[in-house]
Image (cartoon, rainbow, N blue to C red; front, side):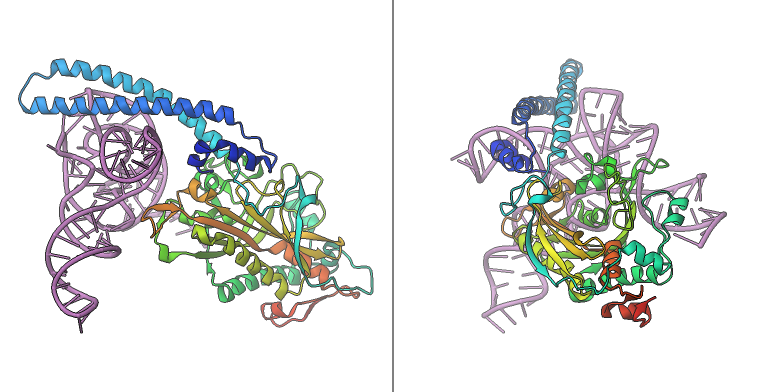
Length: 424
RNA sequence: GGAGAGGUGGCCGAGCGGUUGAAGGCACUUCGUUGGAAGCGAAGCAACAUCCAAAAGGUGUUCGAGGGUUCGAAUCCCUCCCUCUCCGCCA
């Protein structure tokens, strides 16, 4: 949620910023509603103050043993006036709140201009694609050769966009998640967290998936208040919902390995082959809760933590700064990590690291007590994949494939594979 | 699923129709005492919204959530949510 104060004092500046996303802020609509809200609120406050004073004087009169009947009549009039204006105020307030929840975050000044992903800017590259002495296969062919994938079985069990893994490939998938968790907890100072995979509307509203993106989520008909998590960002970030954190507890760094569930509505026909785009996938997620002054630096660090996974696995990748039109709803600035996939001959997203600044914190009422002001102020929240497990599996299979159809296991994963050096 | 007990400020905890935004305690801040600290003493200390250019200050809302009764609700009634205990079921 945007800072309502900023919206009130300088709506045109807000509109200019949002225009970079291609979003048109209806300033006139806001002004109209806000003016109504203000007038109603002032009048409601005044009436309530009058009623409160009146009630107090009734109590005092009663205490003196006087007849309160004439006073009660006046009270009834005041009560009905308060009820009337309250009803009006509630309508306006609700409309304003809903409108506000649908406005995306302001962009950081460093975000490059651009309408879509073609305008994203490569920031740096690490590692070079290895030359193969043969035509590299994609992960589906490799995995099926190892009898490690069974997409036919998955579609019989559940339908499209699901996977069944088996044997060494299934274990490699688990090894990747374990390795990432260990790396982040041991080397990067994150605390491992286990969270619910079903979350409430309130939690999803806090991180920004609701109310706008309900169609991307899997609902639970049995209990309409719950949804499957589309990312661990939702339960993990909501750890600090409604909290006022002591300054010395910040920064908080959490890491969680969870499945993620996405409807992929609107992705019909996109990435239908293989593991790239699934309704269910595993992800190791990094979340940080920091002091506002530290969040820009924290984004750089969090991104580096995600990069460390790819570097340790020896996977070539690049870091891309998302442009204004490609940045997610709640983010002020986002870096994507794209890993090299020889089977596709291109870089594909494997991690997305975002600084949401105070956007989620305001929705969640997540605050810290600023020692300089003594006041509770919104924290800044960040999240990033560290990294997507399924896509990491794809990347390892494709980058470490051999002409004989086997796959060499990267050194750092071997302890998690019972010491095995290859899949074949 | 059944029975019972609860949900009050950053935390603990009193209040059970009218100067209660809420006693008391802890934590925190400041001051005094001290060479310094501990200890002790004193004072301050909820959030949110709103009015005011700002500060000071004023006003409103908030005692799990929503509705109701009343001139007036933390306090009475209803519905829901959550927590705890016991029983059942269960990985």
